Length: 99
Image 1 (cartoon, rainbow, N blue to C red):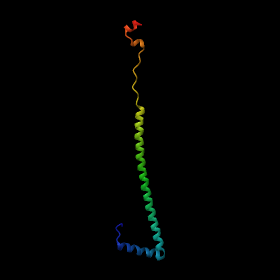
Image 2 (cartoon, helix red, strand yellow):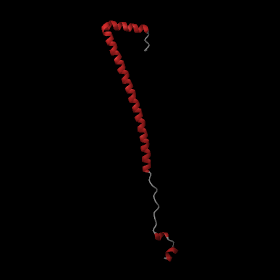
Image 3 (cartoon, one colour):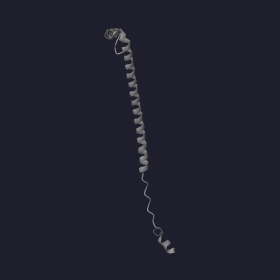
Image 4 (cartoon, rainbow, N blue to C red):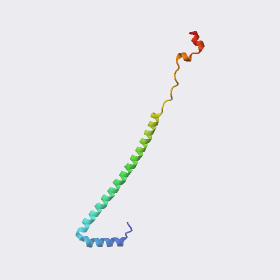
């Protein structure tokens, strides 16, 4: 735990006992415990928000791909139809004479 061994931990506890006194030491311990718990909670919430951000980025990417596919489909222009000739132009000269 942070490279702190048993002798260092005992020294820290003795100094805390001298600074805060035996009556305040349990209260200080509770406050430190709450602070550590809140810090861990904040870190977990931050991680979750980052995961949601990542998920939303993936969803946005998928929608952008779909949007591109739809746009390509809509932008496809139909082939121009050949011009229709009038009936007179389509008939051969022999057909015209028989009428």
